[in-house]
Image 1 (cartoon, rainbow, N blue to C red):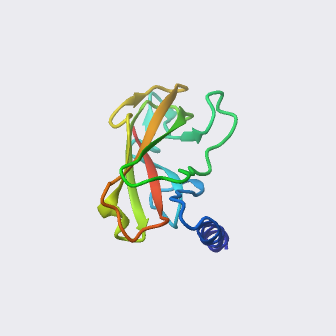
Image 2 (image 1 turned 90 degrees about the horizontal axis):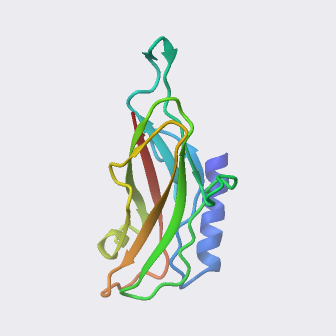
Amino acid sequence: MDKIKYALIIIALCLATSGVVLTSGVLTMRKTVTGLGTISTITGGGGGGSVGGTNSSININLYSDSACTTPLTSISWGALAPGGIMTQTIYIKNSGNVPVTLSMVPDGWSPNQATTYLSVTWNKENSSLAVGQIASATVTLTVNSNITGITSFSCNINIVATG
């Protein structure tokens, strides 16, 4: 039911913002991405098991503020022009009890041809995050100057923590 609710919200946002390039979604803790416009944290490796007699787990959280009080639920890029570059700062907190290595995988692009003209990158690829540590990350959307036929889009931005 939540998937349908969020998909309808995304569709409504896209219709309401015709001509606006938009990424939005919901923060989840999943190994797979389940819908349009989600920003999800994905954990892998090191989960469960035992380290020094204690249960080890991976748990990261995403926030929109440096105090880590506002969970990150979407990134709205606003209106962009061909050849444009936009950045957003996000905050990642390692709430688990093992150090992790971070990576990002954008996928689930809609429309599919958006991958020809748009790219999402960040400055924290393969960086480490200690237990309890908070790191700021810059997420960058780049629009190819030859973009054509796309007035809005959505994608999943998957933050992967491996420990």
